[in-house]
Image (tube, rainbow, N blue to C red):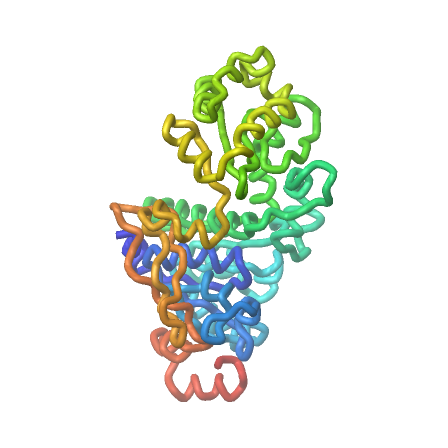
Length: 397
């Protein structure tokens, strides 16, 4: 079962917003005991990212913080720093999203915590990386979509730049952080030594541009904005139908012939302008017009049914509701109940991977702010008198 793979491992989570919490949620979904450290009084910034809300709780926070415990500690105080050190002494993994240098100034850098716990795996998630002239600057997903050139390739030619709608840089960075952490766990299993792991929004954004970079270095030509299409293959884009759009993808000549057959225009595959993929790319506007003349006379469902019947890759253009109601999405069982008090029937998306044929056990809802402070600190030896003093001083909540 995937939810038992990391069972018994303790994770200290000093992250907020999207990238870091998504990283630690992956670890929590795999069975790790994730202890989320939050600011007393306000907690993770995403707790205030509402509307929309579910039973008064931010939907964004709920989406990124299930299977965790919440401990409120003021890490701007000396006593709060000591609490983190005490937790790290018995932890397996620590993940933070402080600016480069900030953790070190607080005494929470890799070398400093490694001296306390040599087996600790230390994952730092930053905006621009931990070196270079911009390393100390903050950053967010759309900012990095602009910086890494993703926005320059997104949208239709002639239109203003737009961001990719999903937070692909944030969530991608969370995935890379989790992947690096899992690799470090394998290393520790062989050597009994922890490692430091670094992931950044910048590096994730640059990596998403792999094909664009390869094409630019090969041709010297900057990528164009092509809407739903891509540079190297045609047809590989949306086509209008009577009620919406259908996406048609033909990655080789055989599939292109099937598309033409399914649309009732087999002669198009023999047109000299469209015989090979380079021909079709060179004559993309004429090809698009010829195919759209056929698709625009049918509904999306009719186009998709006809093409799927002969094995031509295609899809309706779904919105979120249509996607969730798809029989295929239901079949893969990725949408699972998330127990939220006062929000009965609420659901969330499980990890997009199965291990041993399973996506894991039912979720635990994202924690209430500070719900686990006493329990977690008592487990590492803090008695009631010490907890009361820390609470009185505002260090914990």
